Length: 264
Length: 256
Image 1 (cartoon, rainbow over the protein chains, first blue to last red):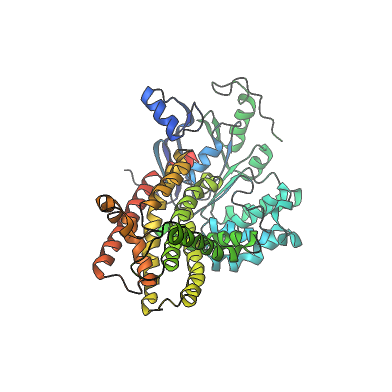
Image 2: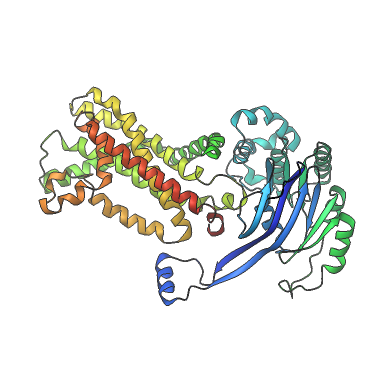
């Protein structure tokens, strides 16, 4: 194995990921046995990532663009080690703080405050660490008295604020943001971008998935474009966005017939 | 393992949540945990001593049956809840790199807490029925530890299956019922006909059950040889369960 330089945070080598979807939905033991005996256990293979090579260094802020179903979220899940790749290898150096989609790990019956505890625990924080940061998290979220009411009463913007405040309360080495930045109101988005700049200056590696080219343009120094699981482009934000905006609407093998993604 | 240690505060919170849900839902939730085994015991008392006219060689039947039921409820409920715990937290498992074993672990721990609560009415009955209270009761924490280790092993072994196959939970429900009758939970082993008694005798769950019941019912600490066998069974179950769970844990997020 070649020696990796110290500043490499994420290294993917030929990573492919395949979802095996059973054609006959959800196997019960009985059905499984029947189909197995008939030799007719058919799985549809869906390659969500195909042979992706990617190296991200310390301090980079990388935007990830692509259509719905292009494999962006799958890539983030592989990097945050939720899903194990079917092929290829992945190395991650450093503590990851993932915010994947809105309200992951929130319990809607609990209050905002209780959810801060739960969510931070799910991110692997200890009670003492949470106690230390609690006030700061509440402050940053700007939720005020709402923090004491059950989050089923929250708007999606408020949930995003809470999620972002929790995940960024501790300085991670790698921060993963999946479509979180574009949901809050203007003032909060401004605050998030401010915090991300701080992180960027602190040398933290950040991965951002967004359908908003504005968010990508303003926060990322580098951008990659995923298309049907393939890495189509990797480079300067402007160049890649340009390629994506102009070339991205050409029907590719899997997304043929799908409506082009409009960015908001 | 280390991962789970790092997430210990999460496990604690999950246990607290499970207990809260259980006891908050109904006003008499807490009372119910204590009443339910008692009522079951009364029914069994009626059926076994009146209808089947079973006589125990030692002590009284209510204590025997209640201790058995407490064990069995803990064992079977923990297994079923462990199996549901992964499905129930599918959202999390697919999105966060949480060590997956925290969910069955939290389930079994909250089961232990419930079991400890349920010892209160048991003690009350010991007093009421004038059953001798012996120092052997102080051995119970060790018994409960062995019982819990064994149950955790079974839970870890079975919970991934519940993810891969949709009907396993029902199947296990039926198996558990069969197992209960193959274990002397509510009947003394002596009533089993000689020629098939070995099935019950060599059932490992019987050994585990007796480690829990002997200090209460016989008022005796189990003999060292029996303890050694039980410890071996519990450790084996745990190691096997942990191994299978670890082997299948990479595949879990794809199927939940």
